[in-house]
Structures are given as C-alpha cells and as structure tokens.
Image (tube, rainbow, N blue to C red; front, side, top):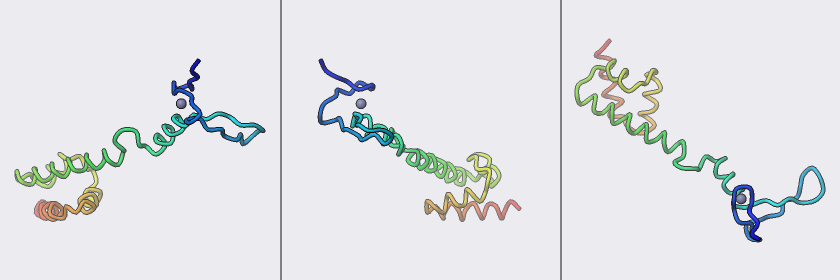
Length: 114
Ligand SMILES: [Zn+2]
C-alpha cells in the first residue's frame, strides 16, 4: 500500500525527511513536497508575486497618465482619474520608475492649475 501525506503526496524515502522534535525526544516525518510548498507560500511565490502585480498596476497607471496628458486633461482631472489621493505618492511612484517626463508634464500642469 502506498503511503501518502495529508496533502496527498506519495510518501517515498526521497521526499520524506526525518526531523528531530524540538520539544520531546524522537523524530517526526516531514514531507519535503509539503515543506517546499509551505516555504514558497511564506515567500509569497505562489502565482505572480505581489510585487510583480504591483509593478504591472503601476505600469498601467503610468500609461493612463501618459494618455490623459496627451488628451490634454487638467491636473485635477488626471489626479482624479488615476486615483492617487496623494500627489507626493504619485511623484515618488513616477520617479521610481524613471518617468520623469510624465513627472515634469504633471508638475507643469499643476503650476498652470494654481
Ligand atoms: Zn506532502
């Protein structure tokens, strides 16, 4: 009979490690597949990582800003459209991604709006 772990991995000698118990004598079996999955999860590596998704969202946002600038939207229209509530956050975001062109254009808009 094939032994499987609680997650259904076939228990083989290769994917099982014996881990010394910290609290009492003896060892317990650890499924290496489960452990690897657990570690991946802890690092947030299941599916696209959070930072990857964030980067994509930022890209879209910056493209939006670029389009709005092209269409001649006002500073307040752009701020409203992209959903940045904080102008400082927006500046930092653009600067971080090297979009100083957009940053300068927005600053010019802002000056014109005041
Ligand atoms: Zn397992």
